[in-house]
Image 1 (cartoon, helix red, strand yellow):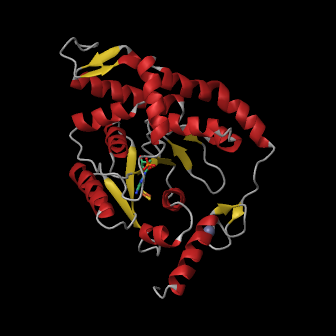
Image 2 (tube, rainbow, N blue to C red):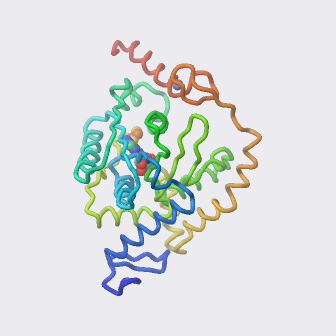
Image 3 (cartoon, rainbow, N blue to C red):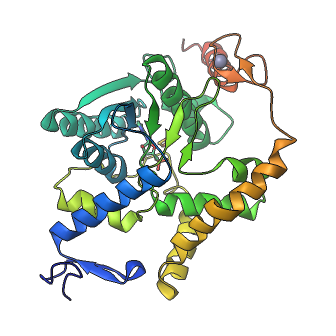
Length: 307
Ligand code: AMP
Ligand code: FES
Ligand code: ZN
């Protein structure tokens, strides 16, 4: 197969784009997709400061490299979850990546904050991944606001977004359906959130990370039963195989037509938020759910004679 752009030997075939690319033209394709995402969704400008959440996986490191190559003002944020072995390895990959490329990095340690994820696993009655995700989002937002950043960027790709949209649709979850998208504007207590890789598939970000020689942390989380939405991702893999481009069309159709309709439905149910009386984060419940989780685990640890 020949590269669709320069006619050299192609290394990547992209049926959904009716194209194949050689390494250099694939990197250019990737850059163009990120540029289009940032421009069309008005994610940020070159005058703004962007905090990029870095897990150590292929998506977030690819995103950081691409945004810095495009001249954006980026700083990485890694949350060290405190999971023995796994978190040390992930953190080491992020630190080595940023150091070797001269990129700024902030590291936040859950253990120093008093709640390493192994404690959540032991003492919370709720699924550890759900609580962990909630805690991460809380700290992304809090650290971005405290540091005066204009936007918080995550490495979510098209497969992540489609799987989440599909799950929300199966439940007709109007709240989430009106609030899902690649760029969520800032509002009182919440920083702007953006996903500049939303036009690129998992396969494409993996290829980019490989071609750029990025050393990634690829071990799955020891507490997760699999990647999030694994079953839905498999279903979509099958649909995409039969009809290349369908994944993107489904998501794009939602952004252009679906989301507006759900936003209208959801308006009536909008929550009134006020700062948490303990930590100041926006909540509709006096003390926010993060502070309640932290307190309840602290009490259980005390009862177990461990704190
Ligand atoms: P995941 O939900 O694990 O697929 O992660 C989605 C995105 O969240 C990643 O692409 C990162 O941008 C961000 N992320 C996940 N875990 C961490 C972490 N421990 N520290 C910083 N960012 C993270
Ligand atoms: Fe959060 Fe595994 S439980 S990453
Ligand atoms: Zn709180």
